[in-house]
Image 1: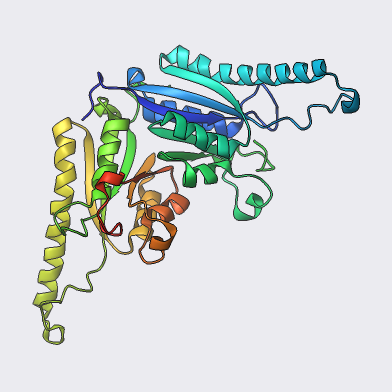
Image 2: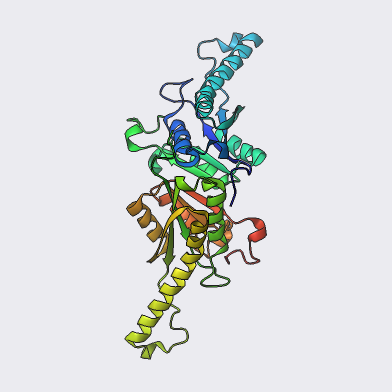
Length: 178
Length: 178
């Protein structure tokens, strides 16, 4: 079997922002998936693992909520892009900080697009040993109305996938919230 | 995060016999799932994990192939039951031996019934942190004709599940074989 001197196990963790609190707060299910990975898999063996933390941003259609978009200048667009980027970086910082504190190697980056497609694409590109995603644990009726990234990537990602369900006591009143 | 003194991460691994070589040989996908767990998750941290190795035996309908079943005596039935049990124990021995060699704690046991139902039931009963199953990696057309235990338990088991696909170079000419 592999010894500690062999290459680290590379675990990709897909994270997103909270729908309840917005940026820079991480969603309940992202936090759960990340903490599960540290507690149940990495444990004290910090040199045996490397975390690859991916945040996918959906192109922001509501970005001009407070702006009259007909008169938006190139500078307005640029400042929105910059705001999105800063938000994403702050979100990633939450996870990277914890990796640094416990001494496990990590990389973190932001991509833009449809989360399920981007995650599968990044798996193909980086070939992690394992992908961990959070999962709101929605029932079939609730799933009709909201995307279920975890279900899609469990089927289509090109590596083993663990989907971590939120515990009942962490589920908000509206389970589509996260 | 959890330190080494905290309770071990309990990983249930479901294993079955080879359809090509029969008992006591393990299926290609079982071996793959087991080895993946040791190499990618347990690594050198043998005290941090405990493996729960479950083998489900389907009640043997072909058991009387060589026997005229109309005249089968209670002793014939008993000897078949005994043969099944020995086969299962030999299969488990293959996995338990490796656990002992590398020094990771394990338990192994046999249950009888429909694999997908029994696995979900055992997960409910023992509440492992993680279930690992092998997966032949069949396409949608092939799945129509053979059971896909991994797909069922990924959806229905009451704990996080990793399904480990066979690598292309380990797949037999008939991919339904294992």
